[in-house]
Image (cartoon, rainbow, N blue to C red; front, side, top):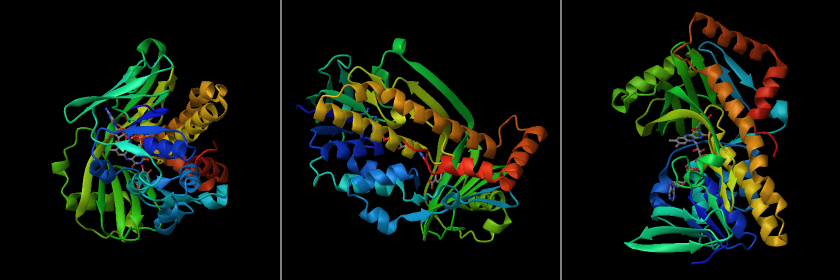
Length: 389
Ligand code: FAD
Ligand code: DHB
């Protein structure tokens, strides 16, 4: 098979890129390791920035998001007692959209056939070849036989564990990494949210987050040690812990219910440079990971794709090599700013093993400062809604 851009991975990065290129008539094939059902049922992020909703608008795939997504004007930081509201709409003139990654992915998958976006699901042993030259290709096996896709470019949108990043030699790469000594235990339940806006809480016992997917579906998280066992957290124990950590006001409004999904995700900051090598481009989690505090992971994948689609469209339309040459540096400039914000909010809101009495007072003092300072709130708000491209 021959195409112009072979995209590895049908997560948000790969699907968005595929649609944006198809909309310009560029030939694309997406190769995905998992089944369509598996991809469509993964529960992940929940808050979309303007860059992400803007791409869905540009694609004309925003109808369900507009109808079912919930625009938010603000969110809250809490310290176990009080709520500090960050009024993002008043401070930045922008909103964020609560619309699950699962829904966004579904919208992109369902539009694929109509838009001529070919997605090969359940492709095994996906391997990249000749990425340093002008004629790279991808091989995979399916039903016992090997397939080959020849392309002008390969887009590595295959997440943190995919093969694309590994195809770039260590001799030309730099890796920056911080692994946190805790994870997030998440629960999804069909109960109304405890608050109409998100609450990020720093409690003596550790971090908690109250989020939502709709007026009838809630998503909550608590910080747990990284080696915690899911079996040790029956639903009731988790609801009890959330009630303590989110503070009395939120606790009074928590509706308990059985978990639809419960999982533990580790926290990591990770950046791989460069994001281009020869004819291979990395986008999304294949190149970088942020801890989830601040909801930047999916949105960064979308901003990478905004840059990368422009670069590739410029190349195929006008033979413009400049955009391609600057993709990595442009994308990384934004990546690092999001890495900083996610790391800072994680540091402010979590309990670390080294958090002694002094460090705890520093966190509280920081929250006191934020509560009283319009400048501090504006800084948080402009990062939360997403920095401009
Ligand atoms: P992914 O969504 O990881 O997509 C990569 C795709 O590549 C997948 O479909 C995968 O199956 C495919 N793939 C992998 N290997 C291969 C291969 N060998 N061959 C072919 N295809 C392959 N962010 C937030 O902001 N908030 C959250 O609450 C949040 N929770 C998360 C929970 C978990 C468990 C994880 C893993 C991430 C979470 N994130 C969260 C981060 C966010 O979901 C990601 O940043 C986002 O999914 C990145 O999109 P992506 O398309 O780059 O990568
Ligand atoms: C959600 C996840 C986040 O990491 C975050 O910062 C806000 C919301 C969520 O899953 O709803």
